[in-house]
Structure formats: C-alpha cells, structure tokens
Length: 256
Length: 325
Image (tube, rainbow over all chains, first blue to last red; front, side, top):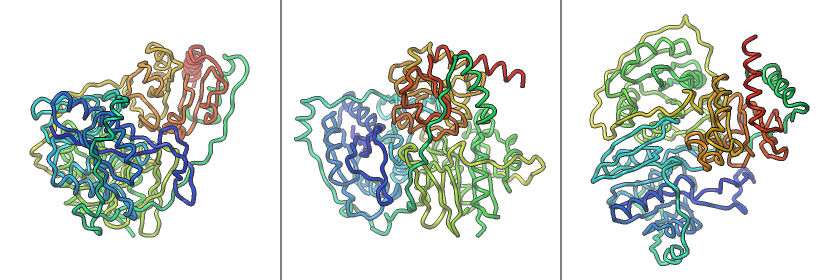
C-alpha cells in the first residue's frame, strides 16, 4: 500500500501567543507535530504494519520542519519529504493545496491521511481542497479506519454523533481525536530515523506557475483578545453563594 | 455596492439550525442592499422554506433528492455546485458546522477561490468584506479578506446575530432539480451519541467537567444541571484522557472551541489548552476546590468549593427560581 501523510509543524498547545510588529512571534516557541496530524501518522504506520507498503510523510515549510519530519520517521514512517516554501512571499490554504497537488501529480497513492485541522489556523481546508484537486473522495474527522482490499470503512465524528461511512481507495481521510493513541518515538526508532530518507524539494521545482499559486486571501491584522478581568469570587456559606450566583446570572449577567 | 449573496442553510433532524439564520443575517450585511438567496437541500425540506424568509432571505432555493437524505460531500457537493453555477453569486456563506467544514473547502477548491473559515465577525470596508476569525483556538484573532473574486466564508455558530424573525415575510421558493450520481462515499449508519440533543458548538449554555468529576458517574450531577438549563455537557482534556467521558465532548485547543452565553466549568483547573477553547464565552462560572486554579482568572463568577456539593445545590436553586418566574 502506498500511504501518504500530510503534516504541519505547529506551536505547542501550551504556548502563549505574543504579537510583535503586527505578527505572531515565534521566539522561544516550542514546536510540535500538529496533534491531529500525529493521529494521522500513527494510523498510517498501523496501516502499513497490517497491509504492508510504505509510509511517506510530506510537509511544507522551512528547514526547521526537518525536526518534526525526523520525529515522524522515528515514530515509524519510512520516508519524509519537505517542500521548502521559504522563498514564497505569501501563502494561504489555496497556495498550500496547489503545492501539494503538484507534488502528488505523479505519485501513486492508495490513501492520504492528514489531521482534520491544525491547531494554529484551524481552517481544516487542506484535506478537502487537496482531494478535490486530485479528483479523489475524502472523509473528514474519522475516529476509526478499517481497510479490506480496496474498501475503507470508517467511523466519523459528526458533532458528537457517529457516522459509519464506506468508500473505495484511493481516498483522503482526516483524523479526529480518538482515532488512536500516537506512539512516542523509541530510542532505536530515533537512531533509525537518522538514516531514513528525507527529501527536500524547493517549491519552485514543482510544476507550478508562480502566478497560479498566489494566495487568494490576505491577513489585514492580527491581535490579541482583550484581557479578561478576573471576576467575582463569591464568599460565605456555600448555600448562600449558590443563591447569590443564580441571582447574579439572572439579574446582572442576564444569561439565564 | 450591492452584492448577491448565496447562503447554504443547514437542517438537523428536519429543523433549521440557528446558525443558518445567523448566516442569513451575515449575508444581509454583506449584500448591502443586494439580494440574499438561501438554499436548503435534503430529502424533504419543503416545510423549512418559510422560516428562511422569516429570517431575511429574499429568495429561497430548495433541492430535494432521496440521495441527499444523509450528508455526503459528493452528494451535497454536486447539488451545491449546481446552485452556485445557476445563481452566480458574489459571495457564498455556510455555517461552520460539520457540514460546512467538510464542504466549503471542496467548493472553494473547485471554484479556485479563497475561503475564510470560522468567521466570528464581519465588517464592510468599501467594496471589500473584512472577516474576523479566531486563530490558535481563540488565543488570538485575525482580520482577513478575500483579495479578489468570489467571497466564500463559513460562519461560526453563536457569534453573528440573526435578524429578528418576521413571520409576515415571504417570497418565492424555487426548486432546483439535481441529478446526483457516482456517490463515492456511502453513509451506512448514523449513531446518535449526543446525550441531550444539544450540540456543543451551538449551545447557549454549557456545563463542563474536568478531572475534578473523578469518574464517569461524576458527570451525572452536571448532566442534571444541563438538562434543567437546556445546556450541553462538555469536558476538559483531563476528563477525556482519564476516560470519564467521550472525546467528542472535549473543549480546548484540541477538541471543540465554544462561545456560549454561559459556560459553567466544574472541577476544571484551566490549563492553557482548555482556556483557548472556552475563554471567549460571554459569561464564565468556575466551580473549583482549589482557589488558586487558573480557571478563576477567566471566570466572571467563581465559587471555591466541591463541585459535588455545589452543582446539586445550583440545580436545586435554578429549579426553584425557574419555577417561580
């Protein structure tokens, strides 16, 4: 089976956001594999172990992404590909999709996995956008995946409810939390990862026309939400506090 | 300049979702005097069209087809694309729900267009439309616009006000017949798991539990309070990781991002990753044994105490006042 994973490097979820010169500062920030993409990598490794084949993890970004790609290799992926877009001025989900579509153009794949959203921009656009460009079916927010021959049976999370969906390969799926428990890279895994192939492709080596990948959206401003002032911590007997709380919610906050 | 705006409404259990009306409200603003066309698709949607006019649609398009009984990206994708082609709108809005998240990127990709996902605010700027959207799960916000061409956006529930319903409004319903072929994904079964039927992303009130609930049974008093208030039950990552509840309830940077009118956090310490998912709620109540818990720093009202004592008392008190009012 030819298994691909599309992965993004993101801020650790525990990071606070600092804005400097109108941009989000990356100084001193811990980066991780986007948590939802981690589920995708784990699922890809399990698929390969059950069905044979190869797992290739593809990411877009600058050289720093090599670190997260090596982590994916240490988890058990076979190959990694970095599409370097450092020299690209601006990029949005349209651009990213165009680059990925150009990369996949001459590849043979049975399944492409990704996270259902990234924990930074959280648009969830790339999976469906890419599937559309490649002309393959897609299923988002999956929590279970079984493949039998060329038939994939999935469970997907639909706002708390669960759908059982069936589709034929080739297919693109996006992972939701609950799909699996991603493994930690083992020490031998980390050693092996150093020797696994990590290919770097410059974005303009892909078959894309600079004008055609230009971002369709622009960001005008980035800002932090107004800091919330600490509220009222009630005092007295618990019973009285509860009574006061209900009164405040009805009369002051007017939410009930 | 007046614009023609197409809004894809969404129904669940044959009832229009409130975010559909909010999207029509957003559409009105973008249309700036132009036309707002609401489209609704499903197996049988005729009973829903009146309400779309009440909430401001100028024209309604319905698509009925047995293959649209369950949402699939192929089925709805074909139906919606056909409507887009026949209307040729300046802007398309969809709810940022499971359906909108799944389908809007496909439409945008098909149309080679930009897409603003998860918009929480709209401003007009001359000819352009500026959208506000949260990033890093609400730790920051950005203002964005589509540089040129068709504007496509998904609207987050509970953020943009719907117009007041005006039952005297009506209009003409157009029926679009679509031929749906080659469904590549088949929905075999839908299993209802949401307990009270109130969806987290659209809930006006959420009662959420953290590690402090201690067990699966520990959620029972929270559920009772939620049932009384017509609220949804949510959870922190800690509670989900400890297997006290299903991951589908998780609120936070991994999990759902919610903005209800009232968020009652019970036994939740307030890790950054949880705060990201709920701190933009309008009013936050924190109930926690630990007075130092960081959840109190974002709470409007706090009670320092054991949730197993406080929550049942709260349910009792609400019962009392809601009965007499």
